[in-house]
Length: 212
Image (cartoon, rainbow, N blue to C red):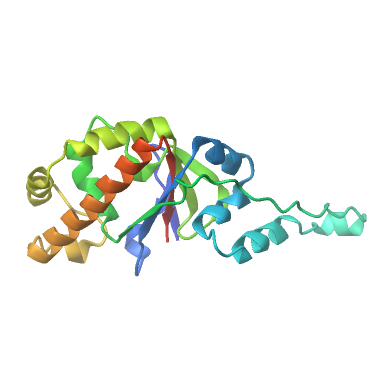
């Protein structure tokens, strides 16, 4: 089930209706993000880069002729199968498992001046790749995010976690415990996130975001 946040229009998972929602992000160039925005089914070339089954299925959906088209014999032309040209630096990923919303709650405090990484700059068409369409961040935003996150220490993150209001933050059963296991889970995933955004900054890449 999907909900749209009224203030931004960004589609995000509806926390109350999920058994599990994990977050994965992929390093992608601005040029390829432009290709995705122009041809959204290509997003499957990112999130399932080694298996084109979902991409071909998405193309077949788009090629279906409407009832009126069938009545008047106006079939849609066969869709063109396309590929994306990735550099050697693209498609590195970070899997933050279920830590993403806890990290987001803390980083909105610790790195309040940077773009919100998890909300993205927009969505890639209407292609469902999990809990809603994929989101994206361009390289300029990732540069600012990396700079901001680099200055956040583990101690700052934990101090924020211990004091911030976590009501409604997914998964609530984990974060409300505020114990050592939850803190280790938070800091370990933050280290992975820091490494990922630093990598995109180094190679001047944007990111594609998937909730699945």
